[in-house]
Image (tube, rainbow, N blue to C red; front, side, top):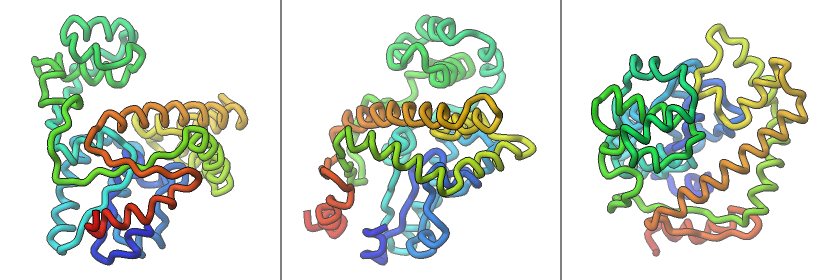
Length: 283
């Protein structure tokens, strides 16, 4: 927001897999209506929370938004932490199609059984994912079985870091600070009405889609509003899962040699002078 306020040609593009859902506002830290009015934002509120939102759909939406920004002679500032979505748009990844019939055939099997099957059909893909990551395993098998070609054969994949027209910048914070910020943020979100938001979402006629229901914090508070967890336990689980996600997220982005890292010790805003120089083309 500080960069957007300082440069009238900047438009913010959200690269967040959960801010695409309408009504999921507090728990995703979605920009407020006032913030969106002050600096143009894109790729927010694209789908109802009972819809399954895909990487391919995000790619298409990004293409449209990016073309509009450039047509105005403006610059897109991509902001967010969903690594796969970011790679999909800055590298133009080839995204396999959907194969619902193949997916339905896989749903009843156990996760480790599915991973073993993937290891037989596409050992390269199987080696790239944890045997417990059911969502990724099912997706890889869905594509492998449905398309008749290995999931790992689609493009150079995430292991390649080709030249990109985008300049990639990351903000590095001490691990202990990130851990503390996770808990502080959840407590602020609870005060801002997170539980009420989840209760309203849970009461929708079609509930939440599988992907939306897995969002950090939402899964745990859904269990709370359904009477499956008390609030303290739900909060503890959400904090723990988010800290684990932050570690995986850090490892994901650290593998990308194209990212320039800016370091802050206490507050991310410490990097603003360096970021300002990058945006202004001074470095």
